[in-house]
Amino acid sequence: MATLIDGKRISQEIKDELKEKAASLKAEGKEACLAVILVGEDPASKVYVGNKKKACEYIGIRSESYELPESTSQAELLELIERLNADAKVNGILVQLPVPKHIDEKAVIRSISPAKDVDGFHPENVGALLIGEKGFVSCTPAGVIELLKRSGISIEGKECVVIGRSNIVGKPMGVLLLRENGTVTICHSRTQDLKNVCKRADILVAAVGKPKMINREYIKEGAVVIDVGIHRMENGKLCGDVDFDDVEDMVSAITPVPGGVGPMTIAMLMKNCMESVEES
Ligand code: NDP
Image (cartoon, rainbow, N blue to C red):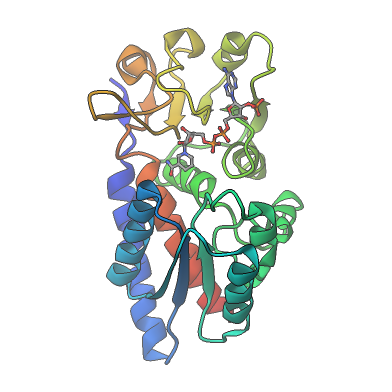
């Protein structure tokens, strides 16, 4: 029987630890503050922003919300970020992505002070991760490492295969697994013989963005499978990049969708926010 890696429970555990930390920082007169910026009316983004604000409230992090119209110019957005960079009361700045098409996402990411970049997307933080220096780490892959550690799954010396090489998931995921002494392979759309590469994995992380693509043909008996994907199916239910029902009987542990990696992303964002106030 596969062990279900319970991201809901583990993320709650982390949020409760952070709540305690926030209370003790408050007693020292310190308070974390996250500025959340949303440009436009994207319904999914609104839900994500709402969830982040709720998590802040639960933990005791003050959140400042900036909901800007779709017509906001890049200059106006950068001006707001500049103001928040200079505001000593704000520890973390988050711009909900994607931004509208007329705004250059890279310019936005670069404009956030690396010391307040709690999403871990700024090139300075990405570089720090690569060379093993301190910095903010992208929340989803950081959440995957935390899930593995808190489930007692050791990474050291294991064959780790990541499917996907995006800047926010696949690449930092590979680096983090390497940092934990895994032997890492990163796959992408040009990888040859993907099934056999995946079959080598003791730990397989699917961040491919294709609903239920990863079936038992990609899995070694007894592997640990982490499913980062999240998709809404026609019947309204959510599914991941992994065909859960097809692989469940052959894996040793697996994350469900929903309730696996998803809740960890917000928990790790909150962790980054708390770290930003501890550092200040
Ligand atoms: P991207 O679309 O940016 O990246 C997908 C990656 O998969 C690319 O590197 C691409 O390769 C690779 N890929 C696509 N098709 C294939 C294929 N047939 N074979 C091998 N590799 C392939 O996605 P993200 O990294 O942003 O997200 C991945 C998934 O994770 C999505 O389902 C997303 O919704 C989910 N997600 C979930 C989060 C959470 O909190 N749970 C947070 C972020 C993302 P190439 O580079 O060659 O194009």
